[in-house]
Length: 330
Image (cartoon, rainbow, N blue to C red; front, side):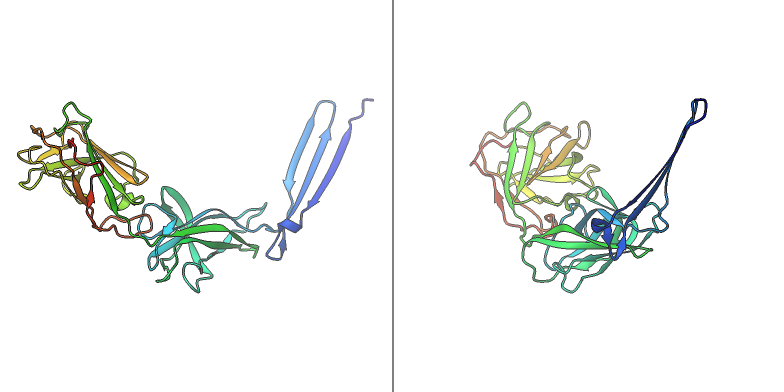
C-alpha cells in the first residue's frame, strides 16, 4: 500500500487521407509520460515527427491593381499584383521554398507566377508574399475570375489552394449627381456645416482623390470662388496648396461670395468622407464674409479623368446636373 504507482501511456496517431498532400503524408506522433506518486504528478508532451510532413498554407490572398488603395478589382489591359499570406506548419516546419499563383484566367499563360517574400500592404492589410507586376489581357470579359495559389516548403510538401477570385471591371465611372445642402443657419448662404455631396455611378478609389486617403474622414479646404457666370466650388487639400481632382461645381448663382472664400483653412476644418458611391464634404469655418443667394438654382458638376474606380478605370468627364430641380444651394 505504500509503494508508488507508475503509469506509462504511449499514444501513436498517424493521419493519412486528407493529410496526404503532394505525395507526402502528414504524420503526428505524440508520447505522453505520466508518472504519479502519492505526492507528485509529472506530465510531459512532445512531438516526435522525424521530419516536416505538413505543407505550407495560405491564410489570406487578394489581387489588386498596382495603384492603391482598394483591392480585389482589375480591368482589362490593367496592371496588377497578387498578394498572399503564407506560413509553413507542422511540428518541425522546414520553411517555405516557393509560392506561385495560377492567374491564367486574368493573364493567359500565367499558370505559375512566383510570389516573393517581403512586407507588403494593400487595402490596409499586410501580406508576406507578392508577385511582380502583371498585365491583364487586353480583352477580358467583366465578372469574377478564379485563381489558385500553390505553396511548397523546403521538405517538398506542397498544396494548391483554390476558392480565390478577383473581379474584372471595364466600365468607366461617371458623376451622377451633385447636391449642395444647408446645414448652417441660413439657406442660400455658404457657411460652416453646409454639405457638398458628390455621387458617382460606382465607388471611387480614395487614393486617386488624395494620396494616402482610405475614405475615412479627413481634413480638406472648400473654396467658393466668385464668377460672373456662376460662383464655383472646388475642393483643396488640408494645407490649401493643391486642388483635389473632383473638378468644378457651378452654382449658377453669383451672390454666394464677392471674393474667393476658403472654408476650413483656419478654425474648424472642412472634412470629406467616402461611403459607397458618394463622397461627402462638410464645410468648416469661412475665411471671411459670405453672401446670400435669393434665387434657386440647379448646380452642375464636371468630374475629372484623374479619378478612377476600384479597378483603375478613369472617370468620364460628362456633366452631372443636380437632381431634384432648382433649389437654394447651401
